[in-house]
Length: 262
Image 1 (cartoon, helix red, strand yellow):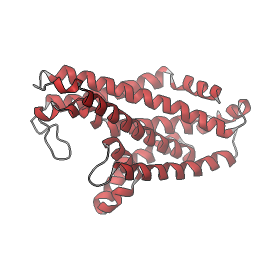
Image 2 (spheres, one colour):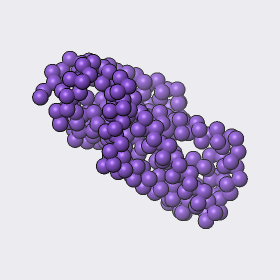
Image 3 (cartoon, one colour):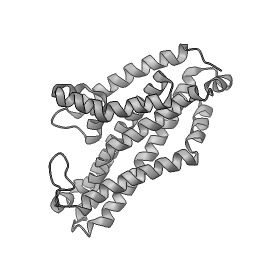
Image 4 (cartoon, helix red, strand yellow):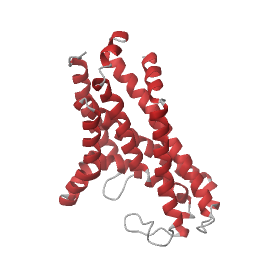
């Protein structure tokens, strides 16, 4: 299975995929972090209806504020990458060649999962580095004190936030992988995943607010937030795990039993 992981990582490090993904992550992290600091106190950097002030950003949580804002979009990027890298084996007909070298379908599936998790870790680390660097660069202009950003408590919060965003990103990615295996088409898997996560869930939640506690993408995002008043962190972890386990079990059975076309 190690060879499967190495082979998948070789595919993921292709410049067309790796560089474009990192460029997207850089742009998103830079955009949201810059908006927070450049439009401070203007009402243009609001979050859930609250304007962010220099005093708030001077606290221990200010260091990762911009990083948290980009969390949902990191998840969507992961969803697209996981879905495309899984479904394109059917589109290009390369799954048959993989099975010639490695007959165990579950080893192929697990190898893909491990390699894409490594890719997700790289994405989150890169986004965090960009956001933190920009936060320090823009803090002076926004008259934000960075004294508390270097405390042990701030670093602990940063580590906790990074872990939460990583879990949320991987959950989104696994959703993309499930959709890729289910529909066997990158375009279908990505469009359905993004449409559901960005539009349909919000419409359903607006119509029936009680459903937000039980929708997959809403719980993935809540994990990245570290929990909220509407749903606890533990609740979102449990609901997300149930979705991933149920969907993963279904597509694993389909992946193992489906015929493979030439």
